[in-house]
Image (cartoon, rainbow, N blue to C red; front, side):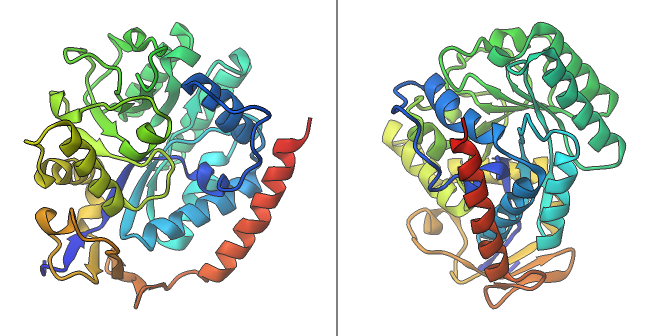
Length: 342
């Protein structure tokens, strides 16, 4: 590749359903802990999702990914009042824009046994019908032992991994995952994992989200596991995430280098190999870690996915970005109204 080109970037952990969250109604009180952030913000939002809102949220998220040179998203979805069919809606929305996606539904017992069963079935249905994806779990602290075991068994049956939040907050009893994990699992965050944690899988570092939620710093260089980069739903600008990952690592250790963070970004291609065949041509002449770690405003000019130009002269070719943004804004208003309903 030319010096101004890379393969398509990979967001190793996204929540496309959060694309419409910007500007959502504030909770009745300000969260002061990570648990309250979940309860008062994100769990209010996911309960208000319907399939139409999910579609426009996914289209907006995929559009923003494409405009950032990200051609592959590993998504983790939750919509407890619109579970059935939700993963197909997300996959179809991304395909329309021209972005690759791996989908998983985050199974949880926080809505009872019936909700957990419905989440497992949505993962099974999507995988059974040939969708690219994984089995999702929210986190050990919201799942029963039986649900964790069922998700692991379902993943084994479909020869895929489990996509799960791990030790993001101090209260997450991640030890309950021991005995279940394999190398194909995605372990998201790992902030409070001890160095010798014994979990198998790839740890996905989300520096911007971890700082925003004030949960701490994972210090990924300490892990023996492979490490990849995600955004945890804060867009899909992986160059910006790489730059922050480097800066955060540098703050903790002067021996940290841009190559460390670039290797985490590079690990995304191991998780989503098809993206390595995509070609992104950037408006910056030297797409090398030591250059781009300090260079703001880098943007793609062209993006080819499977040989097709899905972004040309900085504009998407398959969809009308103005239409997506307008329809997404309408969906956001409906979402906000539902969030405020008693």
